[in-house]
Image 1 (cartoon, one colour):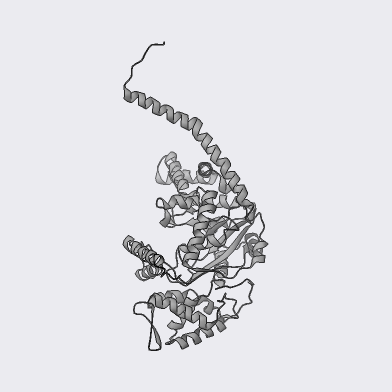
Image 2 (image 1 turned 90 degrees about the vertical axis):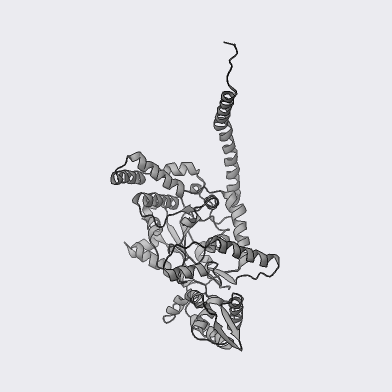
Length: 466
């Protein structure tokens, strides 16, 4: 019993390795996880004292537990059975497919990453690139939102900076969970985005099983009171105008409030920029008719290099104004009570109308519209801008807090810096090949003028600071 056993070195090393793994998995890892879990709970408790809407327990659930809960949901289970029958495969194959979808969708929220790193990065990036301004903002209406209600921000989509900009502006209110497209499902960006609480969606996947898994996750998050944000347009605007809404996520959220157990408050959010970082790619995609666009890596690196060079040589000038407006919130319970069996289409139209109403009117879009209208010199542009401001003054559109002369001067300086306009011998003209870009910016405020013939009472009493 106490004799000596001789074994090869490789076998001895293998035994030690298995022993180490067993020790770690059964004793060390649980202790480490418990330590970090308690630390996270203390961090969340401290953060919640500063937030208007505390972080809900649903958002803090372990990712593994959330995935298990999702794939064993009765509705998902029924869809798994239907998938197996449709594709003539065993049910365990459908189950693994659902598990893959759940792993892809479910985030792994980290309060430390969100508030210690994400918020600071969002603030730095937003303010370093733009003059950030708050457009229409009805503080009283937002303060009246029921604490138990699930808040959903409904946004137009102008740029990938939308995520960063809005996250920065609402950082003192709550932690938002974004619906993020397939473009971000690349390592290590995907891990960072998941840690920020965002969840991924496949906009082009129309399979019933995938849609059911996604729908149940969104509904669980809504029932859990998670503050969410999504873009009904389904992608970046290629023309500058607000596009027609897609109803997928909205239909998942807008169920019966009795089933949800809490009201859902939709907050319209509108974003606009004097310069959209991706404008050339968006215009090119619109002209080609191919929505999927991937900027060449060399183009991205060269642009980034030039930008960094201008920064280190102190020649960088901000890209103008980036402004965010918040519209009048809409209660889903009140909507159902008012419309009876109102359709999702009608709800989407109402929400997009409220989003459009608070799209900020900025200098570059105003001057772009003046140039398209035929203004041929600086004085003519200023007269056209003044006329447009007068036209919109009674419509409730969020206007810049600058006079026509200052708006014209600032916008022309930005356009000239990008070589989109040429000013010589007292005349101003659109540079060759820049007409599509000028039209792109003018289109962002065109809907305000479409509605100008029917002035509406101003419902929002917040400040427009552009």
